[in-house]
Amino acid sequence: MAQTMTSPNGQRTANGRFAPGNRARLKHGRRSQRAAAELFREHAQPLREREAEILRDLGGEAGASAVRRELVTRFVQASAIADSLAANIVIGGVSTAKGRTRAATTTFLAVLDRIQRLAQTIGLERRAKPTAGIREWADRALREQAAE
Image (cartoon, rainbow, N blue to C red; front, side):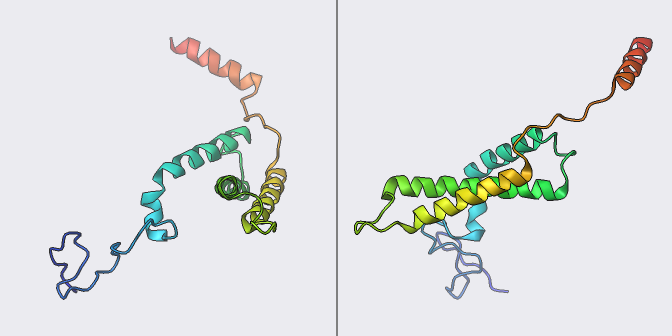
């Protein structure tokens, strides 16, 4: 196994070659799967929160099947893609200089269609979280009173 030499960035082996996993030529990491977890950490938390919010609307994570949870994850991911494409369209416009529709616009519309289909599959209405019946509630209240 090659030793890493004491280079300023610590990413070269003793013979001067790049060590596995180096990031010396990484400019922004936008397309790097290895760097995504580090570079886009600030984007991941709002997506997790959105996913949890949707699952709460569906009656909680425990009440949703594995397939429904997967659909919610895909819905949130598609929403993030749509947000990115929308930002691109705001910067670059809807059409090219020659008047043709930009690829980002076409992709954005396809992603919106996918979001709508996922939303219909998941369910657009809020569902009540399953609660205990009146008998269970009364029994628990009596137990709590007896414990005091």
